[in-house]
Length: 228
Image (cartoon, rainbow, N blue to C red; front, side):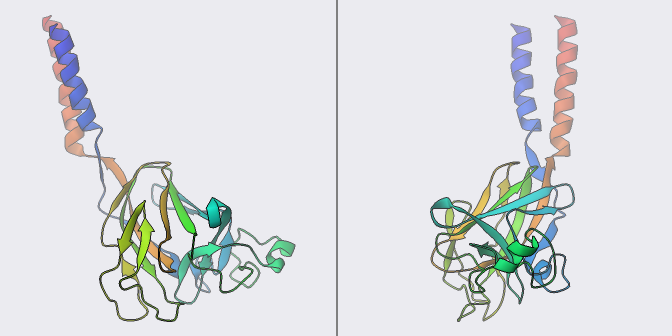
């Protein structure tokens, strides 16, 4: 009975020790800068956009009406990441899809179809547990160039921008999101078109104090078994 109690207590310690917390030094993924001429990718269209960061890999996919597959689009001109229904004909002929050409050879079929609009969504999947420290959006290619009082869907909930940035600007979600490895983190249209400007990502790691508790628990179990 004593051994069972010690094992149960150790189980609680292990559960606590496996709790993760984020490393606070985040890496900023600036999709606006990536899309600009001379940027990492330039204006380009992707069936799956893959980014390898510091300790993590991110895969981004897109959907349109009724969840049909679409394309991830990096749009230049102070915009960022959006959704495109189809590549242009020249992209198909020259097989430039999914390549960082920094030219006009890998573009969306319709120039107006490049942000996240009605029924469209972007899905972000990481290969490890991460904390999205913050995520930024903009509407810089729309008439009012504002997201003030507008709403989008972030990770299954409606988020409304209550701060007026005054014209072309990036609007911060102002909150963090813990995302498990392989778990989709989705952003989608609610009542206004938008681009994803960027996000700050930290890899989630075990708390040092929790690891110390695990070590003490194992040591305690070892000593207790010797007494039984």
